[in-house]
Image (cartoon, rainbow, N blue to C red; front, side):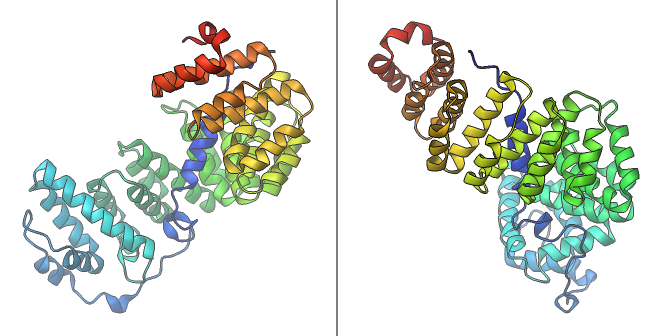
Length: 407
């Protein structure tokens, strides 16, 4: 039996997990979503007028420690100065200045000390969100800026979600827009769940970027996974529903794998259930490999091809998370076709660190056509990455198959 083509499921799960990884401390911007930021008024000792007077002339040499103290005391005044300062710099100077500014801000943001940049930004986002938006627009596209977008939208949308949405629609950076929409969806669901889902459905009727369904699902699931599951189930059959289902499965499993696995297993037999089970298994394998494998072994799929894809993706995630546990699981598989699918996933998981071991794993696939397909895909990549090593391996291990494996 030949392997079916890998669907986009693995890519969706990877994108979702990448999105989850943007939070440095496990919460939005280092604070609990929906909570008010801590402030320390006693630390704000410089008046707005004094802050303006103390800021260096635009384009002049910068003493960053003094500059950051001024930014903490009056971020609105700092924003006005920053716009004029970067306009006076050459492109090279602007890049160097902003890189150093963001490096220092990131260190302070992660430290989270009261009265620091984080509190200053949260105050500005709550009292003057449009100014906070101007500040964000001046900064380079780095992970911290995406967090600033999320925190700004969370504060803005709590008071005026429509204004926050209009600002998000002006953003040109795709990551900024994605993080902003996720935060907006979360804020809308907290405000009015029924209206939030009507809003999401309206935006999904003719989306310019269908991937926004992942942003909505991430935001909704952060508030209420059960309600999000009901919303996703009601979406029309197709790619949007698939993306919502997989995104929810991955997000929910990351927070509560037991409940996510119960939900996925309870779905009616369908392609959506196949996707949900696979996504839960992939995420769970990184949290509790043995438990995830035991659960995954009990699941059924709509077709042999669906089972192949699920096993291959789960095997890849399991091997990455725990190579020994993954190998034990593969060795326990009795069905040769399922074992072949698992070996293919294991080979994919191993390639980046050890291409030769990946090919040796693929050589264990019993079905000759499936083996040639898996090895051909790996050899094509290896020949691009390291032609000499790839040809040496082919000469030793695959002399009879070299012609078949040629790209």
